[in-house]
Length: 579
Image (cartoon, rainbow, N blue to C red; front, side):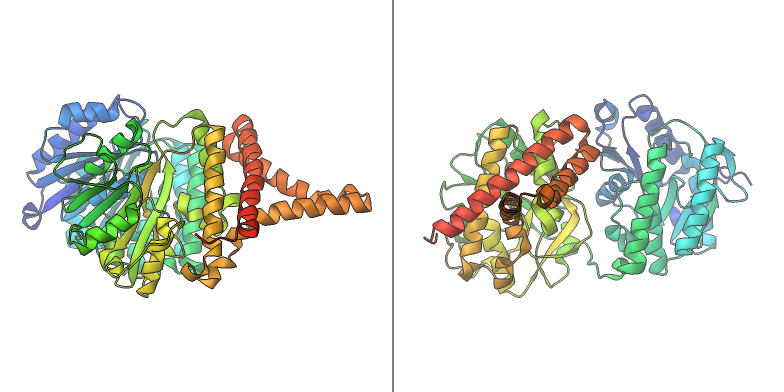
């Protein structure tokens, strides 16, 4: 039987709802036509359905075209990521907005027709499967696509079989059907955001003893963004697949417990600083999150002239965090979970949709994610971002700017800091001179709860847009770190000796020592370790950013390490007054 010839849908599926997830990137030439094709197919099926259209950071008019053509249809949801994270991340985003009993992943280029669905449902019923995966290697598949892709698929199949032993032949075909309960178990644990997303998802399903069946497909090659394979994609997929192997076989990462997405009420606490047009736009982003149970509390000197049913404004210019604690005692904060942020950062629409899984774990008291570069950044801002997120400035805190493995951590940044309200009800005073996130972390630890990092929590941030602003940023950071270092009554002893406080200081001390020994011994060989360190920075920057921007980034990174060290050491050595 031809893969799309089977038309009958069993009665047991007719009263179920289907969510169709279509990720896309820069598909303005075909996206409207293809969405209409999908709508026609599901109207022919006569089943309840919704379409989730996910823009993964398009730079063309795809999103606007979809809004114009389908924005008023109740069964169509159009969401977007502000950055291009990858197909896997787009599908995770779409899932958070879905409500169906069955979830269909479908590539938006429609190399694979939606008319495969009836046969997928037949196979799901007959084999009692939790997931049905389209397979190009199925004996009944009808293929019209390049030989290069056939070879890649076959090689990757043997690679997967060798490393993971999955009971299916093809993991990468762009049509997959899942029962919702199976996807809910597996999808939150998936970390890969690009094309190896599929293999990671299927491995987690297999480890949870979910039955996976294969189905034949008819594949018509088209040159859509998610359907076309480039050599860089192949390399990236192999690297991500090896990372999955490491997490599975070495770390046993997928065995960790994961909560269910409990529907908490959230109170978003925002601290404005500059009161400019950018912060006003950030506030509007917070007011337009697609989540029902939340409020926004703005604490500052003005409310930007915005009147909104979700917005509460309280005037306070100095002790903003203390004002929050006062509002909690007065029962003015209605959320179960508080979410803190400045208006330097802003969320996307899915911001609150996955946090419930984290807080359904009773031992978690606080959580946060990572910051990435805002949409349409200034030119120098990219250099600032590369320095601020650099391993050379963060060491083990690098997770604050990168999507890494979920884990318990010692520190969460203020932007996107989720805290259980119960942890803050008994606070009596707020010491001056400390970052709010340090105070919040202390309260969580006081209640014997954990801080948790999740790559599913992301905010977009405005980073310094000029060299003077970048230098001022790190001067402020150095002085605040020095304050944290000195106030031993408000930070654990372990934190004081932590290497991340002293790394930049070691660089300047090592530099002084290297030049001193070189001068005394009259031998430049003692400068080789320092030279190697500088070359390592330069090589890593150029590899990531190209020669011109890489050189600029290296220069400022080295300069900032010395300035940071100078201000940090000066403050802890010569300023004895405690804040």
